Length: 272
Length: 272
Image 1 (spheres, rainbow over the protein chains, first blue to last red):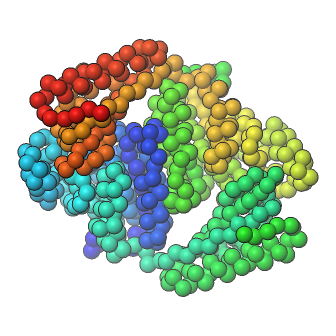
Image 2 (image 1 turned 45 degrees about the vertical axis):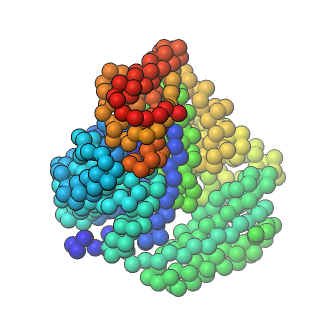
Image 3 (image 1 turned 120 degrees about the vertical axis):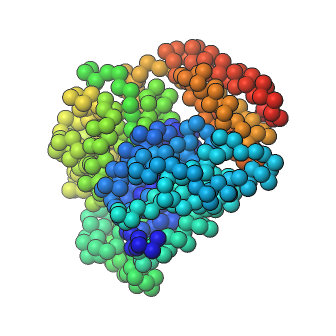
């Protein structure tokens, strides 16, 4: 931790056949994307992959090569079954072989002992983490997470379970407080307006003009109605700055300027 | 089309900052993953990326290099605004520069003319597709899709809008009927059982035994309760075969075998 500071990029891996094959909707990706953005990270992407060690490790390596220093969050594949192989992939990608982790072992053993169950190979498996990783306590389920720092690359791979209530508990209690120490010191502010009666294609040149003037403000139009029959466009504006106040002021300025540009355009529309 | 046959791999790209940053939950990925699996494709992964031409094109190239012959589906980034740049990325990745597509132009022009609106640069932009691509008609919105065949790689890149009702309409009317001609001739069958009272870690060695015997059946356990306090595990079984009947018979055999293995284990549980 001490040696890794001010990482800007973040990348999410949401792993498991059930996600890729559409048997569950990927709410973990949305949760993590939003939390990382609010921490000030530049979240570049999210990759969902089937439970295949070679493929997962291939993509982890690619992301490290292109985006480090980077925070990588993985979800899924930490459990006791034959296809829970995320940490094998992390181990392979970073050349840190799996080792029995004392902290993780203590936690796993305690949970099964309390339930009067003995340690089996499958239960022991959950206590193997990549060499050098720190165990992340799981207050809801049994599989610990893994916090693996890669000092040479100034990167961290954080592996969490795929079960949403385990993931969110571990994120909020353990991961986010630690990430706050290294997150970019940036604060986010957002604004939204809905423009009724203008096709997105009519709004496009106005937004292009706005973005040119406010290079630090991210502006995106989201069509909610029908482009030509009954257009409704939600315009989302977002910026980051060194204080919350600066960010809020800037995003509101951009919003006012957008309304001015629309008013001066001579086109017919309503704002709701 | 004629020259590309029997592609097995599929990969999905769901593009846009709003997806990566968690402002929307990625239902398109689940929709496409499921539809492709039902067509018999081996869906390897889904990548969501911010609206950055270099990054998107980088990952498209990586996926083509590793998984071709492959069907790549992209969603998002086809509209009229400054950050709708998916086809630029496809053009860059495949070395097929954007060109005005006559078919796309006719469709876009007709839609705006019917609404009494003239063609602007932003509207014209939606008629530019990678060289050699076929336009996919959009019966709901205005931006046409793009069907780009890469005969040397036996791969196809299919680009669709991100608005779900446009995506699903184009998929069902246009894309899926065409994909049926080249999809692997495989049929899928599924089964599920819920096991109450056994921790996933107790089920794990039994599932490992089952998978060894039924190598062609995919088996995955999904914990729904609490591992040690009140365990409920949904076991999902799936297989593909040359006929629906063969697939159904095989998956049911595996399900019966799982129940037999559980009964013979001597452990206490219920099946619901």
